[in-house]
Length: 177
Image (cartoon, rainbow, N blue to C red; front, side, top):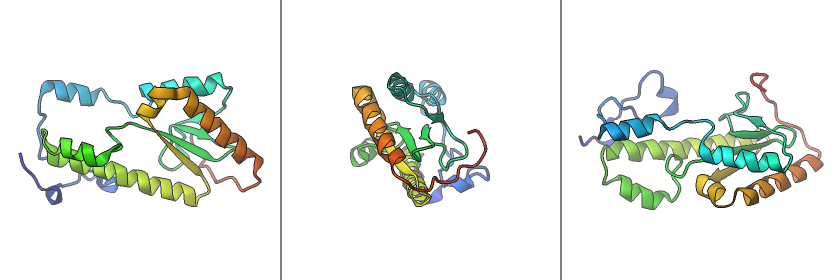
């Protein structure tokens, strides 16, 4: 079904996210539905790999801190560092190439709009956190899978540098921390 991006209608629940709705679409296959349904927002494979590498280095951190905008995957509260482990597909890595591929697939209008809205949301979240005094680190899943130890070493270096500097720590809502 060909639907222009402007034709998307957002549900009341998702109105704030600006993500397109599935309302005018049907699943391209049962297998595709099963695959997409099994994707999780928390404790993804690459997130678990990075957490294991950080723990091996003695890192102390919080997970999915609800009091921090965007619910970062990993939060170093004392250093005010928010880490997002971004999936290549969902967060638009190599977007120009991926966009061309998505445009030829099933429900292409939805998927192009969905990933674009994710990318824009990520940019807004990063900007807002930085404005609050957080350092934001976004790591691609393929970077973690290729060398989690190097990513962990980089994060630990950032934590050490940020904890040595005297600066106000951003407020964190007292929910979940």
